[in-house]
Amino acid sequence: MLLRRRTAEMLRVDHAGEYGAVAIYQGQRAVFERLPHKARMTALLQEMEEGEQHHLAAFDGLLNERRVRPTLLAPLWNAAGFALGAGTALLGEKAAMACTSAVESVIEGHYKEQADELGDQEPELRGTFLQFREDELGHHDTAIAEGAEQAPGYRLLSAAIKAGCRAAIRVTTKV
Image (cartoon, rainbow, N blue to C red; front, side, top):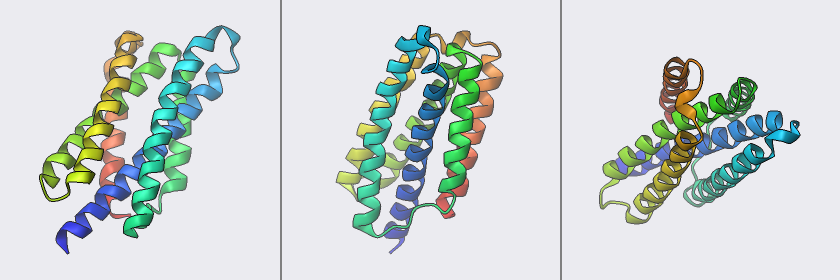
C-alpha cells in the first residue's frame, strides 16, 4: 500500500512536470516563431518539445493504467510554464537556453532520485524514469552547447528557475 501511494505521487509529479515542460517550450516557440531569423532556434525548441510530448503521453497512459489522478494544479503549471518560456525567450536565445538547462538539471536529478527510491520494486517504471532522465540530460546538454551559461544573469536566473521547479515538485506531490 505504501509503495502504491508513493508511486502515485511520483506519477502525479512527473506528469505535471512534463505538462509544464511542454508549456515552457510552447511559450518559447510563441516568441521565436514570429521572428524569421530565429527559425533554427524554433526548430530546436520544437524538437525538444516533441520529446517532452512523448514523455507526457507516457505519463498520461500510466496515470490511466494505475488510476492516479493528475495534479489539480495543471492549469497553474500550464500558465506558469508558458509564461516562463515566453519570458525567457523575450530575453533572448541564451536566456531561453538557460531556462532549459535549469529545468532539465532539476528534472534529471528528480528522475534519478525516483529510480533510486524504486530500486528493484518496480523495474519497468524505474526503467522509464532512467530513460526519461537520459532524454532530459540530452536537452540540458543541448542548452549548454547553445550558450545557456552566457545568458545575462545566468546564475541568478538559473537559481530562481531551479528553486521554482523544486517548489513545484513538492507541492504537486500532494495536490
